Length: 149
Image 1 (cartoon, helix red, strand yellow):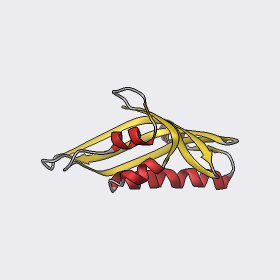
Image 2 (tube, helix red, strand yellow):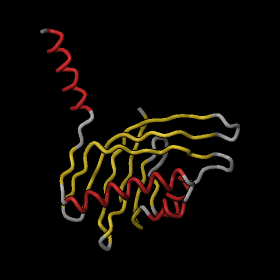
Image 3 (spheres, one colour):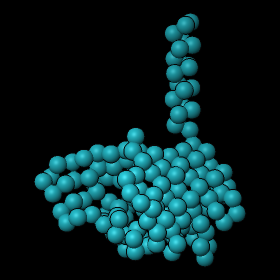
Image 4 (cartoon, helix red, strand yellow):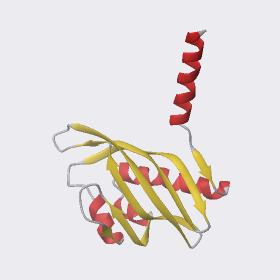
C-alpha cells in the first residue's frame, strides 16, 4: 500500500512540474505558441532577419552576461553567430502564458545545442521570461530576459 501511495505522489509531482497554464483567448495563445516555434526555427536556421522580425521596433533583450540591448539592429547583432558556429537545436517550453489585453507574458525553459567551428557540440539550458506586445494584430516580443540553469 505504501508503494502505491509513493508512486501516486511521484506521478502527481511530475505532472505539477510539467504543467502548463495558458490564460487568454485560445486563438491568441496559439499565435504566441506558433511565434515561439518560429523563433526557434529561425535560430536553428541562422535566419537573423526573421529573428529580428520576431521583436517589436522598441524591443529590449536582457542577455545573461551583458547590458540591456535595445532595438532590432542591436538584437539582430546579438543573435548573429560568428562564421562557422551554428545553433542546431533551440527549443522553448512555456510553463505559463498569460494575456491581458494587448500585452502578454510567458515564462519557462529554453534549451539547445551549438556546434563550434571545430565541430564540438555545446548544450545549454536555462529559464526565461518574455513580454509580448500586440502590434498591428500580431504578437511580437517586447522584452526578452534569460539566464542559464
